[in-house]
Length: 74
Image 1 (cartoon, one colour):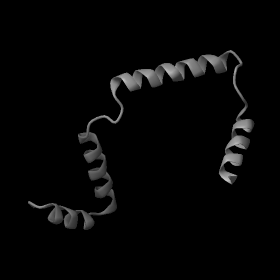
Image 2: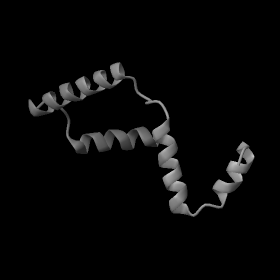
Image 3: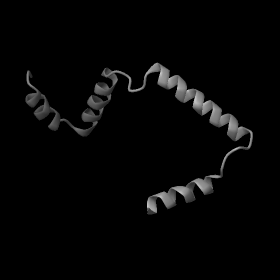
Image 4: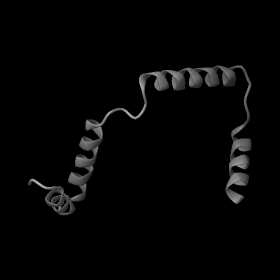
């Protein structure tokens, strides 16, 4: 296979499990979506949020669900 069209036609004929394997492999070949700096910032933010929850600062899951429900109704 030497063209994108040939590859696309071959992929269409693959069984579902082989398509999934191909998809996973293709994803592993790409560059990370998140930079190391962004990942570190996200992890620090999650640590901070976890500490706040451990200290009793936060809102109940019931309130979160209610807020989400209200947002979805808009």
